View 1 (cartoon, rainbow, N blue to C red):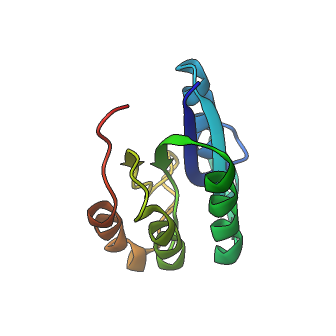
View 2 (cartoon, helix red, strand yellow):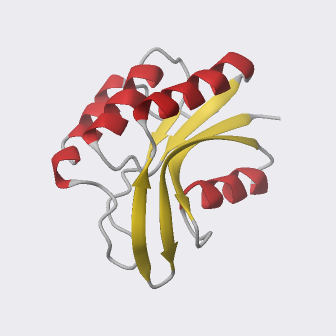
Length: 135
């Protein structure tokens, strides 16, 4: 069974983020591992609050996954700010696996999910890590 790593936010409404990535991976017969970057209090009508996960904890989540699992592919989602993007990039840059970068910027309800000053870092993430080639 292929192992997928989703690096994204947690959507308390279950319609997006880590929750949606797990459902999608399972539908394709893959096993999901996760690294949660932010917690959101949201539903279909909007985002009530965003709680950032400390970047040292994000780093520890990623290191724990890569120490124990043979990850076949990575998919990013809500990375929210420059510090999270830099932390994720620093771990993924040396990985020789397909990576799908999903630049989550705005929720379905129109709430911002990526800080303005981090928008320019998403292309940098794309250039530093190998992009999806299929697996």
